Image (cartoon, rainbow, N blue to C red; front, top):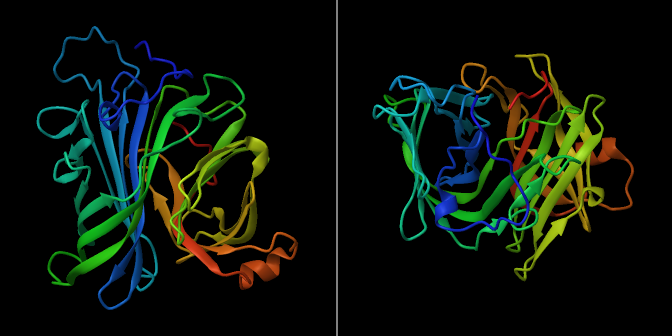
Length: 355
């Protein structure tokens, strides 16, 4: 069995090294989500996640073919005109030119799918599937948002139930998107805003937890919010946390007690039968939000790669009335003003998430 390192507090993140892979840890991902605007003013959502996993194999195995590192990728396009999430997935062992994850900076690829960080700080994302093709440049406009205590982000009540975790909000997206397959010629220029998460850990999900609800929101005033709630088997809050960057650039670490997710409306998946709370009320300290999805059917079935089924969706964040208790009315028509846009992730609604 490999000797997985434990995530500990007091180990500050160091860049550019920590933009790269951390292959001794059990699990790692680079996760990009964002909103796109076409030149004819159509709103779309996209995601691209590259995962790295170190299997529980004997490190002494001398074979070049031993899968000591596995790479996965999940990519998706949320297009309301398509009626459901368009998505694809890949898996490969690292090496042989098929898949790699650099240890020195962000440079991950599986065949021709890739995300890479240039020396000027810009990210390049390239993905081609039968239904869509991305060729995006993602330009940072703000500093890295370090989550938790200096990057040490708790995921449960025990100290080792944690990850190293940073985000890059407010990435400006520019590039080309082709929809409808390679033969349609339906390619066009898009712009937008995106969010990147990079997280690595050796800890499995806590025994009392089944999954999590997560948001990454770019606010229109330049602020940003990451908030997460890990749920127990009864659907209650097991753990929570978050990071808020306000419009003036100041950063605030949010305590578990200051985070609350409340379902407003559920969508019944015709694919898996799961009930997802696709409209949410989120309280993050003094921030009160109502989240409304771009479209309901944003369920991703990745059982052919990572093994999970989850809902990953583009959402608009509205100002919620802190005093309102009428969740049905709020779900039907948010009364507040739009504050920003981002993504909502819902895991563990089909089965317990296995990291």
